[in-house]
Image (cartoon, rainbow, N blue to C red):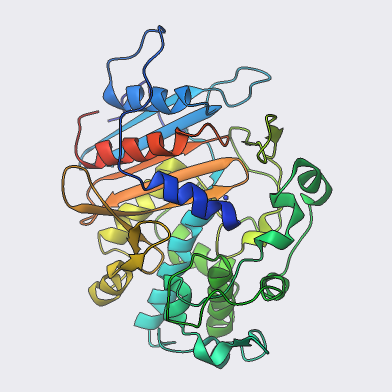
Length: 385
């Protein structure tokens, strides 16, 4: 049963590090409420607190055994005042990495590849040069962000300014091009010796999936995850620049005082790492199925949730999932995502019985991400909604 007025169902790159690090700070209450009357429901109050930090639109949905709740605040379109859609699609950004890691681990379970295989074995001509040797980077390094590979992001104008966005929002990048752009920069560290978040890792993981299966990463996501779980509002858009179905518009500030509408974007620069479009409902369904053991055998799920320190974020990181402490004790697994204006966080308890997804449609203010983190923490701790 849905509450909070729920009607029946009818991002990325270098900025991720900054956003995710802030989001993973210890949870604290959101800013003081304004004089506007607030709903008594705790989830609605937490959504309102996120909106009060400067987010244009906010939507959250939580699930627990036999129950669910949704809440929204702000607007889907400042020009019209249209409310946030209950079943709105949005770019999930780096939450895409959890999908990609799941497919790789399924292939490991099928005996098609090993986490100790190297990039050089599967893609011998892709990562090579005076500073690089793909034979030293394992598949595990890619999924765990211990490869030392840099980002392609600094070379993509659409991600850095309103002018760059307007000029290149329809540009298509190939995975090979993204890896070459990243390799213009020196490695951050020798493979396996440190931890460093990089979308290039998951671009390569998507390329390896295609090499192993003979089918595209997008097709594997569809056939292995979207169809079996009936994620009817989840799509892998390829180079298609529009968000299908009901959705809120997205806004990015690019470090200025002015927001730019960035809803339309060719997301090919995020293949494997951040390009999927989904809904809060579908993301909760995916994560509860994943941690509940419906997508991976126990040994593979143990691999995914075995974590290593991620000092840059102040948490631990497994294979496509972060492990974050809960204020009530214990921990949860999840991921932050961002791709030009859409910011989201998904969290799920270790046993997969309780999940929470929240997203906003702008960069918001300095407290936005902490308020998002607070919502996830409180909901997964079992605070009533």
